[in-house]
Image (tube, rainbow over all chains, first blue to last red; front, side, top):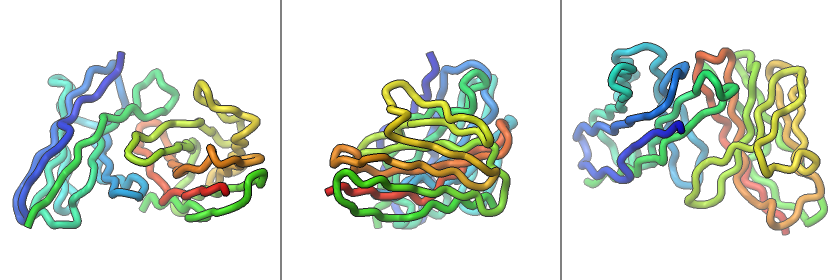
Length: 111
Length: 115
């Protein structure tokens, strides 16, 4: 089957750097997406890797290695407002555009 | 770029009412839109996939006569919850994308409460 694995919880302090890993077991897919979701809110798009390598968007960066079936989201200069759930997701070639989500990582940023 | 607008944000209505939720892509053409439902502390559950100009594809267990989806243009899809009942109360979220090799972008969601 197709699945994505993420750590369930990560805790870090303000100003720190945190990396959230995503390993997957899936056949071909278009790209790896990352989303942030605060309690009570909708997911917000953060980053997308169509190709292997690093994509940088401000404090957030994302990485993909298809050969290693692995990706990660890197958050720098952590702020309290970054406390949220983070999901990785892929859109497999054979799923009509549907997203397959990881179970989400709950990030807690402490002062 | 890639902004998806969803309206309304909140709906409270009586049982038996039909409720329409709109999802618009503001700065790109959304060839495909998706409708999700989410209960508190649970994952997003895909309800249906909607391609512009064609009938929506519903996920198993989702009643197509209950949740009517229309995607008449490249920038607008609507979800109508017909004859809503309290068990339909939930957080409904749409997403949209242009090409298959591009990410989905989500609307802000609609919180539906049926009394």
